Image (cartoon, rainbow, N blue to C red; front, side):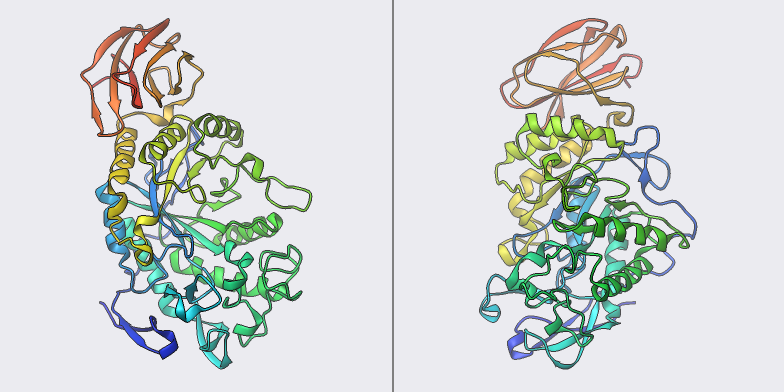
Length: 482
């Protein structure tokens, strides 16, 4: 049953209220005690679905330079259209920021002249007193039930479409932006609870000792934990969820690990236990849990690059973690389809997963819920997703079988996927593979396979791509071929 929810949006300077009519999630969606998304034990580079099947994530998600995804947070954003678009393109993954900390988003210190959109927050605004945006202060002890209902509804909508959601629990980026921190719920000027995320008065909340990403600010830590308990309660029923503690916490990794352990501990008594970054797998920004001189994240291992040689090398270096590695393009945006497509394919044949940061889904910067501006790139990403469903990727590992030519390979004893970013010629060592192999060329731009040919295995063979565009050479044992 749907019910109308009144939320404060749009011209907040004028105090306008708009009616939002979006339903809550169905209750009891999953039977208690059933499995959830996990890591595939036979090849921990990949995930395992709740029904025990290996999964490679190929995803697309909404983001913008001035605000995170509105999938659950903007009450006027129809996340069903967004998830339908992913499903229609064969994609199965989306990252979703769920707590940005500010109700309205601005580019500058003149908010009402530069308004972008409304964010639903987990707290009620009861006052007494006015916050820095001129509205009643937050009461961090009173939760907004609609926030959690909408969160669960978004997870249900994603699951109904076969999509896994990567929920980012706390946004760390905003803590270093003074113009936005001014309006954050954890700014002492904006809440009635005297919770102060900036006791040193730096106009930010980045201090590794007493900021919002620290273990030395008990006030903030307690409200964060209370919020996290409510989030877990709201989404624990769902088997298509994994958590990431924080987006771009560049301040204190010990805090991040502590929060991840807190979520794990809280879920021990729950029907489901979800994966939590960075404990169970690296978060979207780094190459593993590492410490610098001040317990900060070590960025030198990050694989966020369009340089294919570096991308391949850094993903290979991180395989020692024996965890899924997600190639997330947040922070390295590009409008060049071939550059992005080549990065996606290189990540896949390097044993990784793909999650594309897609600004075309942002209505406030010229996009729309269907992301029409990047529809062609999304179709090409869908071709990659379709290809992964045709191969036994869970049996494969990145393989050093390219003897000459510009190419990267993923292979098992029965199959090999060789990606040639610039076409041309490639020599592939087929020793250890069956004596007879079926060879096909896959076009990553249109998703079409060539007619198969037969090549002998057991030795190095030379192949020539159809042209100088990027191509995928797919080799499969004749016995395994359909």
